[in-house]
Amino acid sequence: MTAPHGRGLLHLAAALDQQAAFDAASYVGPAQLAERGGLDFVTLGDTFARPGPDALAVLSRVAPATRRIGLVPTVTTTHTEPFHVQAAVATLDWVSRGRAGWQLDVSTTEGEARLFGRRHAAPADALWREAGEIAEVAARLWDSWEDDAEIRDEATGRFVDRDKLHHVDFQGATFFVKGPSIVPRPPQGHPVRVVDATEGPARRVAARHADVALVRVVGPAHARAVRAELRDAAAKFGRDADTLRVLGSLVVDLGDGERAAEPGHGGGGPRQTAQGPLYRGGPVDLAELIAAWHASEAVDGFHLTPVEPHRDLERLVNGTVALLQHRGLFRTFYPGSTLREHLGLARPANQYAVTGGAS
Image (cartoon, rainbow, N blue to C red; front, top):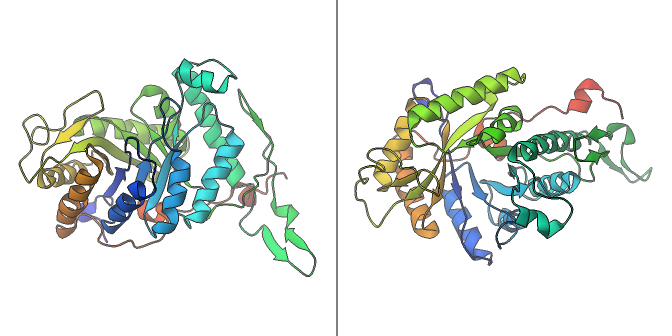
């Protein structure tokens, strides 16, 4: 599918978050519905600040029940070991055959710190600096196995080519990792990294490390300004700014029918609430909003969180997405099989294989 009017492809994602849902069907069915709509990926939030299932484990259960849609769990970096985090995300990429992402987040409260008992809560700036270091070391560990390091040579009894395994030797401000990883390089090379770049401390990490940045804003002008800031910052870090996708994050309440957007919501734009920018209206009006913001280059797409998970996701897929597809603004099938392919992102080269890094 070609991009309309010279714009990049429209990307759409949805959150699967549900309160007090622990059974698999609560997540498998909605993920399959989102996949039927051709969405790029689904997310599942996680935090140590409230009870709930482990997002990465839940999406590992969803992986064999889906075939194309990307799976992006939130995995916090503050109280978890970087080595374990990267191995778990790499494993999700393997079991989903290249559809894994990872939304980085931090734990800022003293209550979360007490659960682990290893250190006190720290300021957000420090936690996001640490998150950036963990994103960096994760990439190095994913590259610590070259793609053809696993040889499984029964004649010689050799499982790996040791010359193609690399030590990382990363010293961060609060941790040290030596490596190599215990998981071979993931199918995508680097699973897709997602960062909510709405707040200042996270924005630098998003510009440097994220493949997808989420921004919670209420208007296209603000979104356009944040997108430009992120792209400029990415370029200053030596990245190609076109490899960063910026999605607007909206909470959506699609109501109980096809009614028009309420003034101050869909009709006049989303309204700021304690839960984030809220769109309230009908599926048709949401399609108009999505098309307008995307056409004006405010965003590369949207990440949508349904207020009523089952009702609103069904109306999003069968109403909003169907209309966008009818207008030729959104894909009707997946042209590839990996999340990177959905997002139009190349598979990263292995930094050690390219540079011949020390092993």
